[in-house]
Image (cartoon, rainbow, N blue to C red):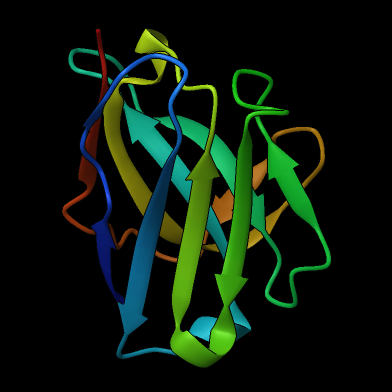
Length: 125
């Protein structure tokens, strides 16, 4: 089971950019699709983006499409989320997770129920 550590979150102003990282250890990172999720205070966790193990397929929710880019470096066991044109509604704790599979229609299946501690992104002026 992989151990996931997210980082990179901080306070930014609307319109700014930020890159999140998720470092995996203890498992076959390169063998899994990976996803980013976020959870605003008092709300349910939202599925944001996903990438296949070979980076050949990606998925983005409508709320971030065109503004966020997911990528990965299997040699570094690291997943990234490049976020641009940030909005106050992007404020949330961001988590990464291993996926068994995902689809273009928003379907996903978690590989396990293993979550990191998350990283807080706050977008505010």
